[in-house]
Length: 315
Image (cartoon, rainbow, N blue to C red; front, side):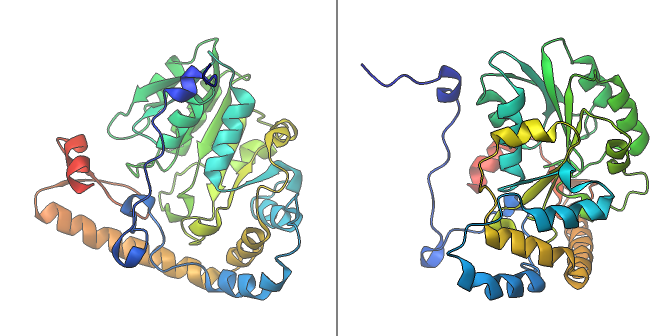
């Protein structure tokens, strides 16, 4: 008799096989939106200084890093959750919140990890088409049913780079039932210049219990290889922590994260480089007749007629 498998997990496409580029090294993945300036120099120095302590287990609670992150948004350290990249946090949230047959609402044309993590729980991903390459929040609110347990909003959105503003998002949050958790993924928040971009930590301080903010050290801080993400979440955190592996964030990631937070020079250089590169690339793309989607991230999205065909040709 064959080993029994979960049919909804078996239905997911497997991870692509590894490929090696020149000199046996993995190819650079343009889709990953990595920081071309590399990691924070302060983070590199801190990691190098800590190498002799690798025989020690990491701080399971990530106390020092949680205190530093909480202080920046005026929240209690108990409101911070750390993850092995924000992708692990997405997986843990779906594991904790979704049962087989439950529903989650998200945009069709957003971060692919949401759909995979939802479907891996046997839940139903209700994907709402983008409007003008941006989250259609009124349509997403209308798609919420009594079976909905979770909503994902990626702001700025990956892969379009578009954003929703403060008033629109607050209206949406007021329309979501209290028992539905809204996850706002702000992985690219440091690149945003939009003046009315939502400032959401005050809502958590004010007691909104169904709001969770996701952020990461992978993009602006250049620590993608160390896998370090974090979440701001109020009362629900004690429940979510029950799903977390004890040592999910390694010691070097915690040390690097602490150092990167204080590296203002690297942050400024990364922001300036991203803004300049986005302008140059956008102008070049428009010059050859392509339509550039206005965005506020460290990447540029382009509207094409046959996206799947183009992706296959570039593979």
